[in-house]
Image (tube, rainbow, N blue to C red; front, top):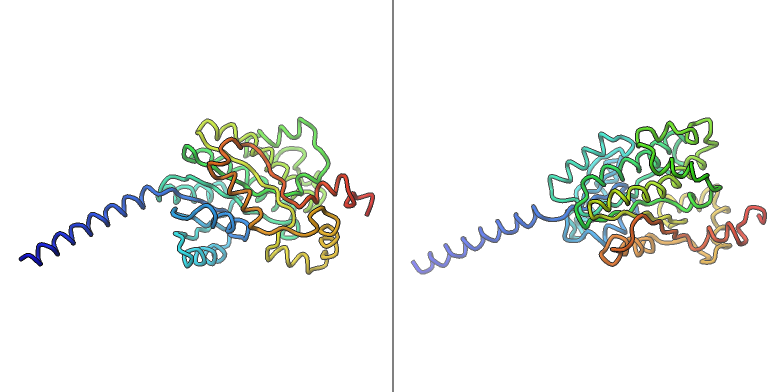
Length: 303
């Protein structure tokens, strides 16, 4: 009888613990990453332990590979297929994430490079898609939540736009963005120009959205990396344009490309409470390549 009593009490404690654990799991924060690449993963590994992670990518295979790697490292991650050029797809991702808890953090590292697609597709994904992500996640992010979106040094390299053009990129209703005169195909020279315009728009959009996010007690910032070593970057460095990149490294103050963890260092500050006074800002992380482009040996007239 005494043994049965002990077992009964043990069983009761186990049931209480399981219920407590289930309640904890339900109340856990949710972290959403769009873009299952090296940059996003480096940031997630810094910030997402102890929380539910959604790994969203337009290629389900990519999301599954990254999720599996994270799960094997002890994280609670699930893959999700999302096309960020589709508002409907983004809303489906948000609804799935909300079922698991409050969305406390959002990291957008999705996008196309100039060599990956057409100028129309780059604008649809990198410009329109990012604008929709910022808009929709801004409606659901929890109080005290934070976000970063990955832009690019390219947005800092292009010629300055007028005050009016910058304002249009920042505040034009999302569904009207691609109808702006400066973004019409006839005014976009090539895929690089499309990419630059998208990244300039990302930065301006973050500034405008930060005002709206602030009304919810949340923050959003952007990071503009230079050449960061990833599988895609290695392909570029070892490809036909390799000499261009090697010249950039040699003539920039840092004298080398960057690493994903160096971008994650900054993202960790921006996403954490230590960055509580930072919102609506963009951080250029390119080893000084842009500085050299304007004021040093990388100036176009010197090459």
